[in-house]
Amino acid sequence: MILVAGSANLDFVVQASHIPAPGETVLGHSFKTYPGGKGANQAVACARAAGAVTHMLLALGADAYAAPLEASLRAAGVQMHIVRSPDLATGTAFICVSDDAENAITVAPGANLALAAGHLPPLQGFSHLLMQLETPLATVAAYARAARQSGLQVILNAAPAQHLPSELLDLVDVLVVNEGELALVADCQGTVAECLQRLTVPTVVVTLGSRGCCAQNRAGTLLQCAFPVTPVDTTGAGDTFCGVLAAALGRGDALASALRQASAAGALACTSAGAQSSIPTDAAVAELLRSSSENTSDRLAALAVYCGLA
Image 1 (cartoon, helix red, strand yellow):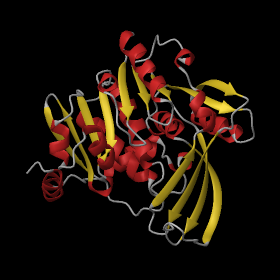
Image 2: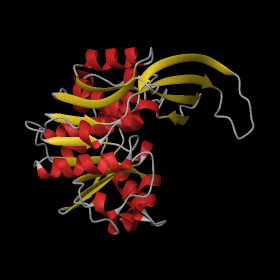
Image 3: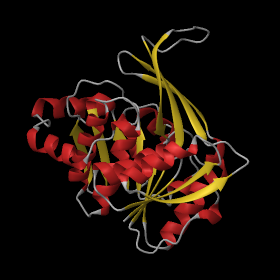
């Protein structure tokens, strides 16, 4: 059973030809709202794309923006532990998605900042705690410490990117980062391999977009090529990866298998618009895994070179 503690935001999404540069105004094609937030996205992915029993601790305002977030989590089968903050607005994110599927995101955390150490529910029965960095860092550290003391494995998606104190990293069992986040956390501008050498977290997973991912644990380094898809919107793909990874590890799957499942789910999430709305079902993930042979020797060799492992 997985506990996700983190953010929930209502996403305001504009589709446009390109992401505006500073000072530029761009006319968009369309506008929609979608349930989002890194924590909520990952909880939905745990439940929907991996079939895991999933609980989520989240903070919401007493406003209309909270309703679609609760409805989306409920529809995915996520058991919610809600901290209601009537004096704060529900978190929101403003997203521009370009026609080539890239995005730029600005988040107004709102009620997410009200999540505090005392809000953590009893941890009996949970195997893993999954967190992100859209809630206060002190709260993340307090939850990690409590989880460690209760025997849970702590998975931290260090996003949005920021420097992390060694005291927090010492409490993390699995760290998930993209390249930019890796460079910041490791304080290193070298290759992926060079950055990984600077970290002492037992397992570090680095997502590399359309290339795939790289992971390091005590047994060595693992590479997983991306599943080829035609992207529509990459919003939520990384969160989908994190949620499915946590669920697979929670089932006791080996890291290599967990990476493959998470990569398949993340790829499928790129083929639809929105964050939670794009998260695939576990059946769709299983079908892609059955029908794909994505890890060719040539692609693995190219990925190793990119990571500085060759």
